[in-house]
Image 1 (tube, rainbow, N blue to C red):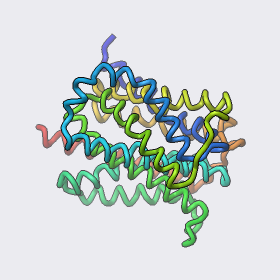
Image 2 (image 1 turned 45 degrees about the horizontal axis):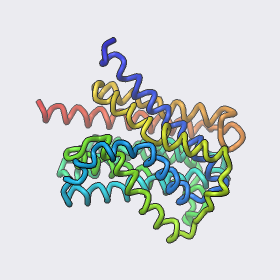
Image 3 (image 1 turned 60 degrees about the vertical axis):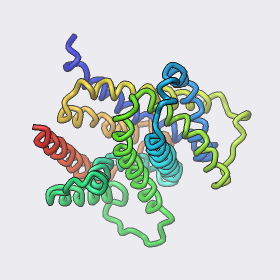
Length: 313
């Protein structure tokens, strides 16, 4: 069977798994502090990926100091802080039965990737991008708040909005850093190293934020959820599916294949699968916001790929 024909389905599968990750992660937040969740998922993830470290240990020892610095920064910003903000946003959304907001705001990542590219790679921001980025942010506002005004106290849904956008910013920045790392280190090795370095970093955050947890008391159901997150939905499983599909898929096709993420997320939110206990009611302004956000991000992504292809041509 032609790899080009089947590859988009691997991207769709990975995107669906990332949407399901929020389902399992949210249930963990009911009884386990956010930083402890991040610590333990990376411990399990590293155990799963440790054969890669063992196999490539000779190559890992040869990694230069500058590359190690980028890997460390990538791990801190993307792997730990991004996951921390996202998990905390999910935990706080429970009070509002709002599963859609923290999940869908992750689609803002391309905006931050392009802005970071402009800052670090000196790529120009077009007027079209600025317009579409502003439109996408308007859509994200409608998803989060509908037509209601924002309170300046930032202690309700406002903090959820900031945490979710903070996660998107961290993961978008992580994309830029990942590109630098992948020029020097193969993807499987870089992934395993990220999980390894995330362990001491997240452990430090546990003590800084005073969010320790006795994992000897962990419930069987929660342990199973951790295994699913570390090995499938948020760990190696989804990542390997995504990158295998991406290397055999045109960028303009992968952009639409990744729409499986918001589709599955919305289906979870509006059905009994919603981890907050009851289906979420999505208002008219919310629906308009979803359409505006996704349309804007698709146009931004397609334009960005088109510009890169022109440069290569």
